[in-house]
Image 1 (tube, one colour):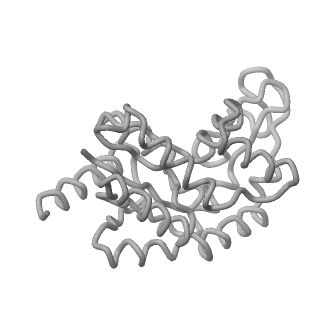
Image 2: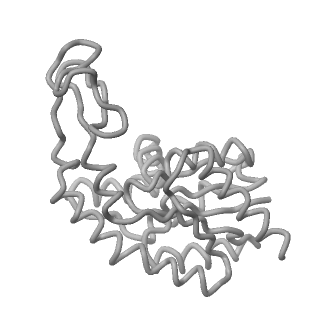
Length: 220
C-alpha cells in the first residue's frame, strides 16, 4: 500500500506527475476540486454543506474538505493506496487529515514536493495563450504558434487569460507561500517529505520521484 501526497506551487507540474504516478502505482489520483464537484453534483450531505458556502461566495471549511477526502479514500479503489494531488493546502488540513486517517489505521507514507523556483513558475504560468475561436492552448516559450498571436488550427486570435497575467500569478504564489509551503517543514519533521527538482523532462522528473520513494521505502 502506498499513500502519498503531491505538493508543489502552481505551475510546478503536479497534475502531469500525478497522472504518471497514479498509473505506475496503480492508485487513484484524488484532487479536492474533483471530489468537491462530485459531492455537490451527487447532493451528498457534505456536498450540501459545501454548496451552502459556495452559494454565498465563501470558502468551504477545512472540516468539510477533509471529510470529503476521508470519504473518498475509504472507497474500494483506494484499498491499495491513493495519491492526494495538492491536498492538504494548509497546516490545519494536514493535522485533521492525519487524525482522521489514524482512526482507520492508515497514514501517509510519502509526501512528494516538486520544487521549482519562482521565476520559472512565473515563466510557465504567464506564457499560456488561448485561442478566442477554438480555445486551443499554446505557450509563448514551450509550445508557441507558428505565427505569433494566431492559432495554428483556426487562425483565431490568441489572448492571455486574466489568471495567467503576472500580477495574478504573483498573488497566487504569495498565497501558496503563506498557507501551503509551511507543510514542507511539517512533513520534513515527520520524515515523510521527498524534495524533487521540478526542472527537466517529464519522464526524468517521474523517475526522480519513484527513485526517492524506493529509497525511502528501503530505509523503513
